[in-house]
Length: 288
Ligand code: AHG
Ligand code: MN
Ligand code: MN
Image 1 (cartoon, rainbow, N blue to C red):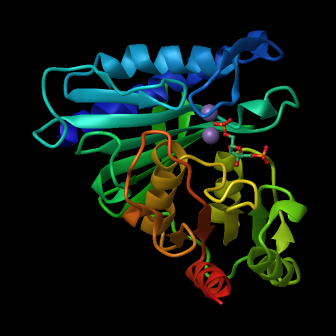
Image 2: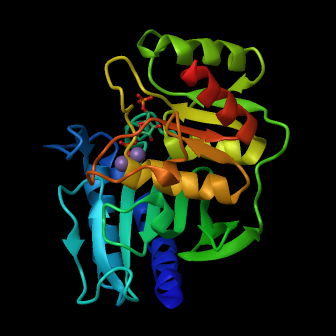
């Protein structure tokens, strides 16, 4: 299976430049469809999804492919996840609404050794690509995190054993203040008086700030959306895998995102990730 994980990660790195190269021509075009989460889809989302499906679905050892942009899991091989094969869950373009404003976006990938939807604990690896000033890929595998620069479709490791800084500096909270439940709003008020606001509207960019500087990112439960906005399979679990491997913590408000029971491929989950102290304070605040 380890060879297949290598193949998946190398393929993500190889496809990333084509995703990035396809952005300018799709900056303002809507695809005119909605994704299974009921959100409007940009042409850039569709393009990224097609590129990754074509490349990842062709890998021997990838038995299942699921994407934020596709209703159902696609069987792409004869094997079965967990019997030597893997399942890949992908957010092909994270933060795609940032394309119109030319701000950072990303790709998020979870590699599981059980059928999708899979619990985060079954992730054997997780990665995100950040389309920032530099295209980088951050991977959690076998308990450690490595950040690479993607150069000509090849990942060149630039930082091994990445860990969250001990002294938190930044925070970023999604949703709108009036939509936050009271307990979260009170927690946010405390955090605001301690850390600096860094919120860019793409989870990958905001989480990479937390991984780089220490702090907390959350897209919490909202009054109108008790499960928040982010999807467990395509955003919450893979990002939690990375932040926890980097020495941080994750929570849906009560437990690690890796322990959340998968019930639906597109289930949403409140997401809080970052330094353990801030995640523990969050859980205590919500428990009161
Ligand atoms: P996606 O583009 O894959 O749907 O993800 C967008 C998500 C996530 O990247 C980000 O944290 C969040 O939406 C931002 O939501 P708001 O626009 O409500 O801030
Ligand atoms: Mn996303
Ligand atoms: Mn997306």
